[in-house]
Length: 372
Image (cartoon, rainbow, N blue to C red; front, side, top):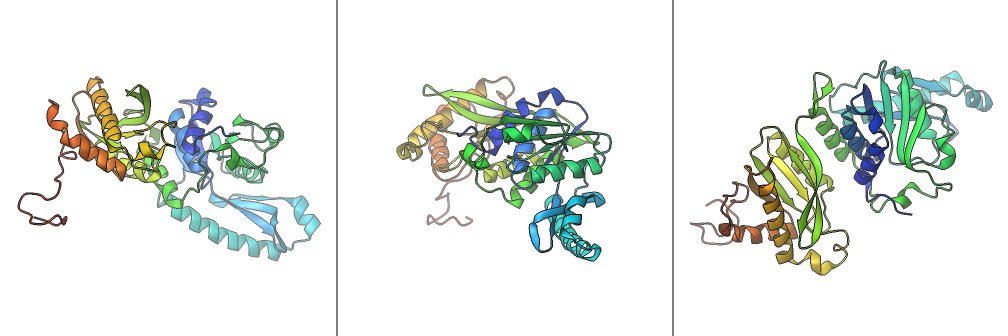
């Protein structure tokens, strides 16, 4: 049974179950990689700082899948004395495995944190987030490591958790989920899009979360919300972000196979936001329209949707005075150019983004995009 469109959708649904924690002294920790996109949405909804919790299992030397313990940042170390006794692992064998895993843990943390300091968990409530729980072994270790790092309350949260695990995870003070199936075949079965999350995507999300922090606290000054825009008798889904004081907005016209949830588009949007520009990540087709490939390549249809979005922005009090530009890719670029052709019929000037030269520009003798 598919319940979530993707990890972003799953994160937003999970966040609704955790809203009672909003504005409390909470830290949200995502389990890399797939748990971080989910955790990002939870942290944003709770107005909480976001960080990763990186753990490494200490596997028995001759049976690596069997955990005899785990390590985490800050010297966190959890050992399973029962497994150590039954397997007869020596102190030297344990040290050898621990040294190897510590090296891998340090490399992983350095690649994900990129110099950022670990968020202090001492005396705080911690919400550990993954994109789903299968066996529960990683969740248990993560909870123990978080407590070792000073957390007083540990909440384990995931969109999908087996029903038997919800009431049987003693390492957590509470388990929160959206779906708790009696039989869980695979976490990915409950997602329409369960494609792999890269380390680069994780870093982008952590960077974006870090920019919301000032003096150790999350500041919610900017307009940042999902929107629905009426066009041609349907509602187009989008996400509007407007930094405080912004006077220009870039509307993203996504191409075929892309959406407002695309990590690449979100990365570009973050760069623009960093420069003080507003962004509207917009799906020009509805979920019902996308399977019809003729819609995907109907440039006039997409351009009309872009026009409707532009008109919507000009009618909103918070964006009415903003200049509007377009960022188009693939068929979205065609829609943006089509829309640009008709901009003379509108009364408000477009931004320099929309006014970028098309080829051939004056003075050029060919269609090659080279400086004039």
